[in-house]
Structure formats: C-alpha cells, structure tokens
Length: 88
Image (cartoon, rainbow, N blue to C red):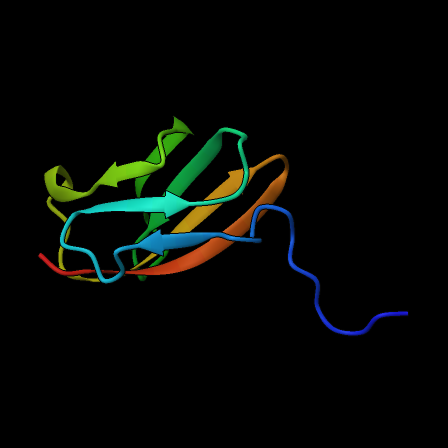
C-alpha cells in the first residue's frame, strides 16, 4: 500500500501564472475539460465567476483592490483552491 496524499486529476499540473499578477493571468492545467472559475476576496465574497471559463482571466476591469484572492477551480466534480496575489 502507498502512503501520503495523492493529487486529484485536476490538481496534477495545475498552476496560476503569473502570480503575483497585475491583472491578466492564466490557469495552466493538464485537464482538457471545461473549468468553472470562482474568485473570492479575503472575506469570502465572490468577485468573479465564470461557468465555462477560458483559461486566461483579466481582472483589470473589475476594480479590485490589491491583495490576496482565492481562485476556486472546478472541473469534472473536483475542486481546487489556489491563492492569487493581485497588484494594481
């Protein structure tokens, strides 16, 4: 038997680039499935949501403050949350 924590299929190869970002960032994943993206601020309020998201996201037009945000990525019933630093 193996020990340790195995990564989910979506988490394998998942990354957000560039991070920190000044507005436009890309979600890199090995998954070919469509992604549902939700971005939350530090108090848990959704500031961006896309049901069939492209893998490039532009935060420039959202009038967000600089700070830490949490990017929730859903695909094929799996969910992964990554931290994103936004610098205006």
